[in-house]
Amino acid sequence: MQVEAWLQRAAGSAPTRTALETRDARLSYRELAQLAAAGARELRERGVRRGERVAIALPAGVEFAQALHACMLVGAVAAPIDPRLKPRERESVVAGGLLLDRPLRRPAPEQARAGTRSKAASPPEPESETILEGFTHDLDAACAVIHTSGTTSAPRPIELTYGNFLWSALGSSVALGVDPEERWLCAMPLSHVGGLSILVRSAIYATTAVIHERFDTPLVMRALRQEGMTLVSLVSTTLARLLDAGLREPPSLRWALTGGGPLPPALLERAHAAGVPAVATYGLTEACSQVSTGGPPLFCTRVQLGPDGEILVGGPTVAPASLGADGWLHTGDLGEIDADGALRVIGRKADTIISGGENVAPVEVEAVLEAHPSVIEAAVLGRPDPQWGEAVVAIVVASSSEGVDEAELREHCLARLAPYKVPKQVRIVSDSLPRTASGKLLRRELQGIST
Image (cartoon, rainbow, N blue to C red; front, side):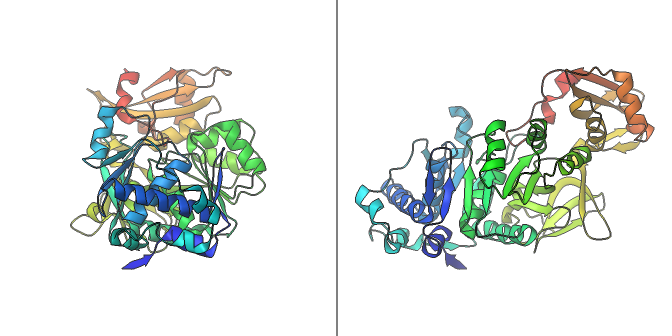
C-alpha cells in the first residue's frame, strides 16, 4: 500500500509550523522539506537507489533529520549509527551501503528563499522516476535498520518497515493523544528506536520534535520548565537526575514517558509527588518502540503470555522478520497481565536466577534495593554456588552523603521479599553501573564487578 510521504504531507498542510528545533536552529516543515529534497537529489547523484542502505553517522540535529528524510524520499533504507562508534564497529551497520558521516548539501539560496508550497512538495529535478516515486511511502518496504541495544549479547540489526512506524505512531497517538502544538523533547540517541521514533512520529503528526544532541540535565530542566515541552522521553536514570536537580510541576508537560528498562515503583511515586506526569512504557526495537504505555497495549498491538510467562507481541508494529513461526514476537521478557489487561514486566528470561530451585527475577530485587533512601542504583545477578546452584548477589551504588552497609540492605530486602530472593551478598560500589546509551543495564559486564 502506498501513502503520501509524511514530510511532504506535513509541508503541505502546516508549512510554517516548526518541524524541528535544536539548540542552534529552528526549521519549519517547508524548510525541512526543502532540505530533504536537496539531500535526496545528492543521494541519487551518489548512486543511491530504492532499497539500498544508507548509514547515517551524524550528530542528533538538523543534518541527521535532513539525511533521514532524504533517505525516505529516495526510498533508501536509513541505518542510524552512533557517531561515537569506531570505524571497525561501523562496518556491520554500513553493510556495503553508503556511509554518511558528513552533512548533505543544502538547497540553493534562491530555492530556500522561494518557500512556496510547490517548491517544498515537488522534486528538485524531474531527472529520475525514483525521486518522484519517493514522495510516497510503500508501507511494506523497509524504512530503517536499527540495532538492538545489546544488553546481554552483540547488537542485532532489525529492519523496520514504513508500516511499522505508521502503526506505532497511530497507536501512540491513541494512548497519549496528539495536540497540534505538541512539542516532544528527545534527548535520547537517534541511533536507537526510542529516539528515532520521535522524529518519525512528529513528521506523521506534523508536530514539533525538539532534539538535544545528548542528555544534559540543566538543558533538559530548562526546556521542561521554560520552553513549552508537552512530551519527553526518558529512562529511569535520567528521570532520577531531573528529580535530583529539583524538577517539579513542569508547566506544559502532559507525559514523561519512561522506558528502556524497569521503572522502579519508588521512583514513579517520587515523580508523581513532584508533579511530574511520569508513566512507564515498555517497548522493543523489534516492535518499533512502544508496546504498552501505563500498562495497556497500544492500539492494534496484541500481547499475550507464553506457557513460561514470556511476553509475546503481535500486530502491525512488529518487524516482519522478527515474527516466529507461530506469528508472534518472542520478546524474551517475562510478564504478568492483570484482570484489566494491563501488562507488567517482571524481567528477562535469560536473567532469571534459579536459586535453590526457586525462580528469582533480578528486576524485582533491584526495585526493592533502589527503594532504600541510600541507594542510587542496583543490579542483581546470579553467581554459581555449590549449595544453591545460583546465589543471588547484588551490586549497589550508594549515596556518598549517607552511609549504608550490607547487613542493613539485606534486612531491608528481607522485610519486603521472600527469603530466597534476598541477596546472599551485597557489594557496595561508588561508580555508576555500566549501561547502554538508552539507559539499560549491561548485565554482561556486571560479572567482573560482582567478584
